[in-house]
Image 1 (cartoon, rainbow, N blue to C red):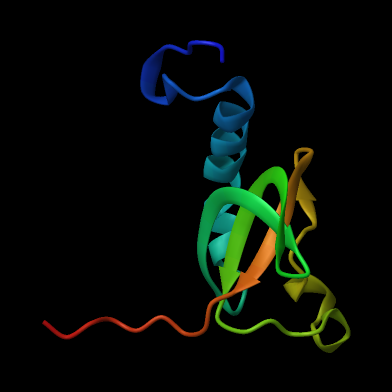
Image 2 (image 1 turned 90 degrees about the vertical axis):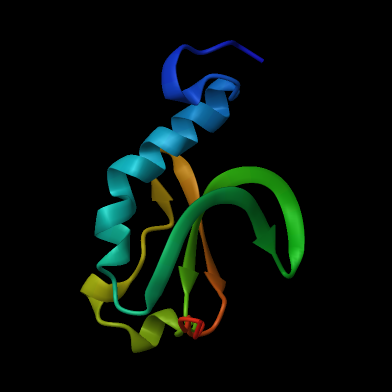
Length: 96
């Protein structure tokens, strides 16, 4: 692991790069319909973790690509970083 200075200290170069790419694109990703969150994580395929680091985009409900308008399709990668879309259902605030 390479030591970084500043707010990303302690992250590997790959983790730091993915965090920076996520930070640059997060606001745009959150503007897509159905998107409820963005994070960094490990890509899953068929319910199994692949081990590949990625940007995770959380959606309330996955919608088949052919049912989306062209402008509503999430990217599959950003600046060379894979994007994984994960359905988590609607997010509701807890009453306190």
